[in-house]
Image (cartoon, rainbow, N blue to C red; front, side, top):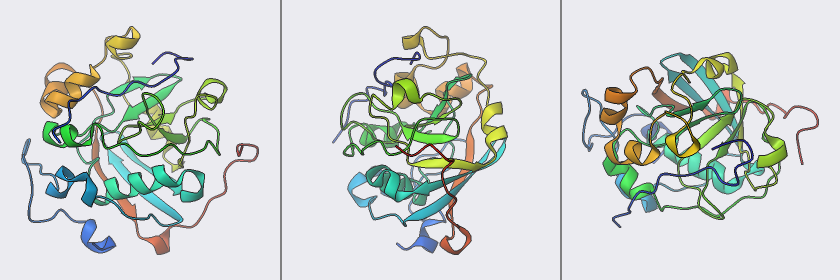
Length: 246
């Protein structure tokens, strides 16, 4: 995606078709592995990965560069907040790479390390949310390929992108409250994706080949070790920066 491009492109994958505490550990029934890692087989049935998110919750990401925390405010984008909450509960993002890092623009992630998981989520769309916050540095937003096409891919704004992205309907649902310095250090040396004139990973290849494709061809990319929801008692609402609400 170039600055001003109308939509952030999603991988064109062909689709083949609980409690809080329990969700924070990997279940016994697990799927394919890479280097001993496993995924929650519930992820193979998106209709089971649903539920209303808390009004405010925090997600701690532990990455190969260090940790950062995202606070999600459901009122900003209810559909997006609910989807993100349920994906994190089922460890969807664990092992995923930051496959698109464009310095001064965005950090994008949200394609699973496992092709089987990507196949079932490619068209598991959620309805659009109204834009209530601006796409300024630190705010996290879903990637999309047109109206009502949001699935699992998200991006963190690295600068003020409000001028183009707000108008196009990109609705932020959370904010990096700790570790933005870590986000800014995520490896971006490969540049943008080929579809946008860069030499970075192909989103289709990431979706269809997963971790092995990235490890072989883009070994310097940073990735997510774990992403877990902070227990509600530990999450206190933090106000948005003044002047950001629309």
